[in-house]
Length: 360
Image (cartoon, rainbow, N blue to C red):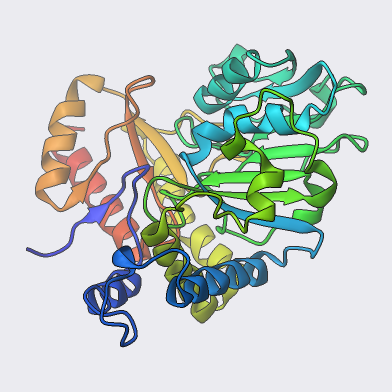
């Protein structure tokens, strides 16, 4: 069976060259006689894989030397707890920006450990935009400022970096990390689940500044203590070895492609194809403010929502899968991560035109 165009929000499509290399190395990695998923995480073979993966990520993002890179388990959701446990450092409150479902989940978890000040929110317009910096009400005594820089469900992306007057800035970048260059030094901590732009589900990447490590709350579980993980090379326990291996292959693929500047060019071109079509039609529409539209997750709706089921049925028959919007918001959503080729987006738009001609 031919591969389909997979628009899933995560686990998401992976680069075909990565899948092909992993298939070739499945039974025997570089003459070792074993699969990567059979290797000891303490053995020299996997240590070399892990070291190369970290080095590649550091190069791609130009991560400064005073930041630790941790490959952890539990996805981004576990970091909703790890962040306050590690970063409160004796303070009682933190600032959070509420821009959608994942922001709300992070806020709910943080409230277990501290007082949460909602510094800004876009709930007044159904989470369809990113609040301007001028509307933020930051607490200078907050331990940190947290925001979700790309809301996977709502399709809202911050195309700018907030100013926090020296308070550590924390970002959940799960659904757009590695989609474009970024200045890591402007953040205290960045975290991201891997299953969208990096690799298999279950892995989380944490990039944390050195001075924010070492003052975890006493009740912090050992595995969630960044100091413990950093001191043990993020191998305090058995890490998700195969997920790290695939992530490393993805990092190498990005380097061969030309790095994140080239990736951003490709992503903007892909997004333009879809958004330009949505803006020219009245049959479909985008619910997101134009200035804050995500390059990775594109929610859209049919004006006649009684056609949703037929749209999904026909799109699937055309090899365009996982276009159903999140259950919390409905509608449609096309996730066009790094590994989605522009041909996939063009095929989607061509189908949307045909469907409109049939039912418009």
